[in-house]
Length: 102
Image (cartoon, rainbow, N blue to C red; front, side):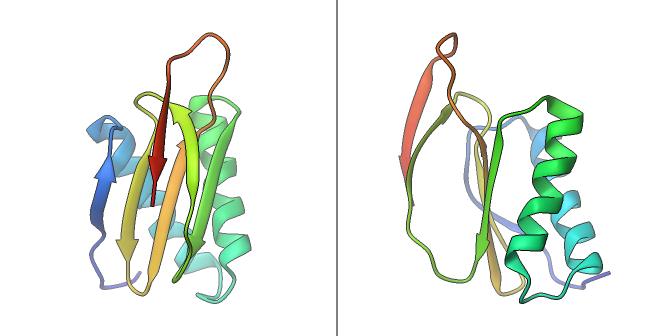
């Protein structure tokens, strides 16, 4: 397991879900090469889709910009080692969307 500690930059996600996101990130970094950002993101999405239902999105990398809309209470952006992790669930017609820029 990596020795680094995840640092949350921004979130509206419940604490329990934040901890799950960071746990999935640690697990993915143990399973995949740190340069395989696509594999890391796919692993996190699969875990979140199983645990919290489909519709999750994940961006992993060291440099990226984004502008997105998400369901309220489903967004977390954190750093771990040299990588940044953005995890969120896309909006649906029945939820209240929130827009964020990173």
